[in-house]
Length: 166
Image (cartoon, rainbow, N blue to C red; front, side):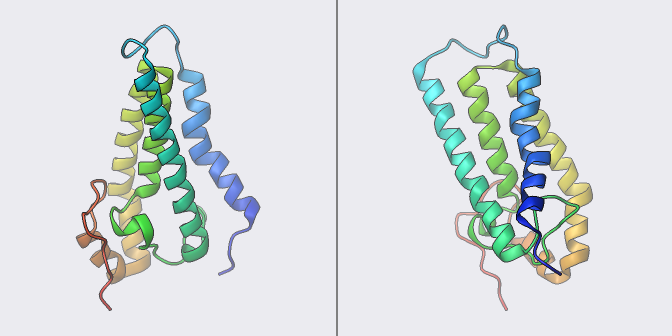
């Protein structure tokens, strides 16, 4: 199968993570409901979360393009199982990146609504992975995915990187 075009990658990034991290927060942001008193340390921590999330997200997209030969979207899935880089430590670093971005926005903007959105996003994705994505990956990649799933946790990273045994 042919590598998806730059425009397909861009479309999928706009449709999924951009919507989740920019559009939805913009619509639900309410300046009247704060989590805690505003201070510079919390905002700086939020900025660090945001930077880490953007870096991790960029890295996972790069791996999907170069190794997986697909996009982040389920309608243009990767052709090869990606188990390099951050995928050696947890199965869903792309979603972890989005959670870092959303958490950073929550801290920077001090928003209760964004905090609730972070929790909902995590729950929705956990259910999606358990009931839809993981069975689909098992079907597409067979034993390779089964071994990976047995050795790499969904959310909490491993201490040592997973190395596929040939």
